[in-house]
Length: 309
Image (cartoon, rainbow, N blue to C red; front, side):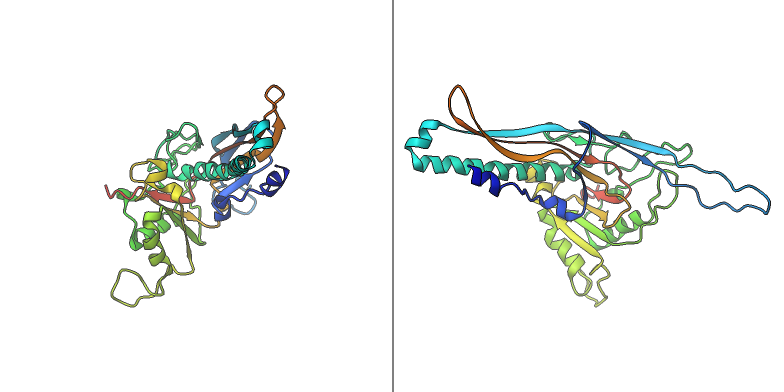
C-alpha cells in the first residue's frame, strides 16, 4: 500500500497545462476572494503652470471561492489480506483507482466552468462554479460595470454563431475591441486559443492548421496558422455535461492576457492516506482534497453556443 501511495503522489492534471487556469495553491483562508479594478484614464493634457489631473482606479466585481471537501474511501478486510491473495490484488487496484477518479473529478469540474458559462446556475450541484458577482453568466451580452456611465459590454458572439473560419475571426476581433470597466479598450494584441468539444475538433484543426485557407477554392494564406492554438476536451461535450448545445458550443480565449480568467484554488491537494479501523481491523485507504473552481474576469474570452439562433 505504501508503494501505491508513493506512486500516486504526483497527480497530473491536463487542464493546468492548457494555460487557461490560474492555480492558486496557497490560499490562506477557507474562502479565497478576488476583486477586479479598472485601469486609469487616458493621459490628460495640461497647461504650463497648471496642475496635472488626479485619477484613481475604480473597484469592480468580486469572486468568492468557497473551498469544499471531496473524497472517497476503499476498505480492505484484514481476513481478505491474509487468506485471498487474488482478491487482495483486486482491492489494491481499487486503491490505485482512487487517484484516477480524483483526476477525472478535477478535470470535469475545471471544464465545467467553461461548459456552464452560459448560465448562472450550476448544472451539477456537486460541482459548483464560483462566479463573478456581476449577476450575469460568464459569456453574456450585458456585463455591467460599477463605474457610472459605462455601458454594458458583451463577450457572447452575436446570433450564437456556429463555428466557422469567419466566425472565429469575429470572436477574435471582439476580444481585441473589448472595453474594460472604465469603458476603455483592453488593447489585447497577442495570440489566441480556440476551445471546444470533440465534435468540433476536426473543423477547428482544419481552420487553424491547414497550410492554406480552409473551406475555399482559392489559395489564400491561412492567417490563423501559428497564431491560434486549439484545445478540445471531452468534458465540454453533451455526453459529459448534459448541457443543451454543448456539442456545438465554442470559445476563443486570449492566450496571454494580463490575468488568467479561470481559477483552480487548491486549499488541500488530492492525497492518498491509509489507516486501520480500530473496531473492524479493516485497512482503509482514503483520498481527499479541498478546492474550488470559478472565474474572476470575463474580458479575455468570447463564447457562442453555436445554435445559430
